[in-house]
Length: 343
Image 1 (cartoon, helix red, strand yellow):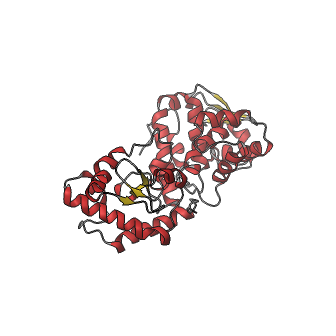
Image 2 (tube, one colour):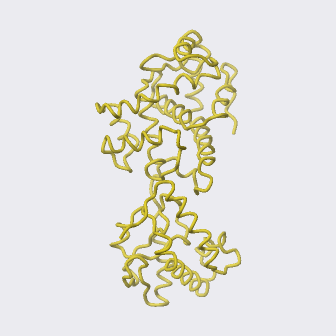
Image 3 (cartoon, rainbow, N blue to C red):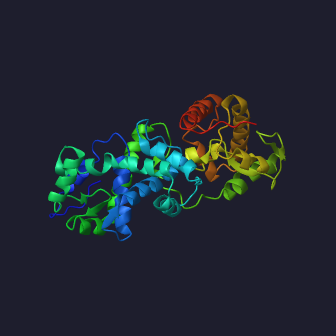
């Protein structure tokens, strides 16, 4: 992906910023600046940029629990601010931003101000080279026409040469930032599925109603009832929920090999908890295999059977293959912060 060319500015230097990164700071700093420009700002307080950095990374950290790396302070700041400000996991970006702009909590303010130590001036290194913080601040003012912004203690001001470029190409620049952030997080989480869909908060979770009516209802119609693998309650048609065995927040999909009928009252209790492999895998495998085999016999052209093809290309539901897929995913999810289910 290449950035649009502009003869009046050094676009190549902007590209070079993301070539060598050891943390997510630069991505979220630039993304936050673009969001502020999009809202009509030319002069932007650092407090607003830092608050936007937290709001932009909120869902990736708190909901999907993607790891940013041990040295990345954004992740720990998001986790701490959630508790300090009593914010919920599904708080909107606007609510988080407004909360952080007015908070008087000294610990929260300290966490936000930590980002002032390096990010604002080091972002300008392709234009201004290396140097002390004070030297880069001075240079940013002396060479204001050539750099994207100049630095002051409490705010930055976007350069008149760069502002039109940012405004005209803002959608593309945000996509470029998103793309580079995705590549970075994928390198830090090579075994975590679907990183691109874990950067932004999904507008709305998809319904599982057709998974119920066009798959599990057909299975239950055939055999009369199934038992919930968690509560052992008998589940009949119309009296169950369809749930993700491995939490949606980790897999970020609704593929049928991860969906099973469950006791409706227990489904909300399970939430994003991980079922322990030794306690639940055998029962999970049995109900999945039964469902797969029944649908394959009754409705061999059922579209949901396609969900199983990457796991079982020969359409033989083998326990060892299923275990080799499920066990490491549970382990990776737990290592990323998802907790095991305790009953």
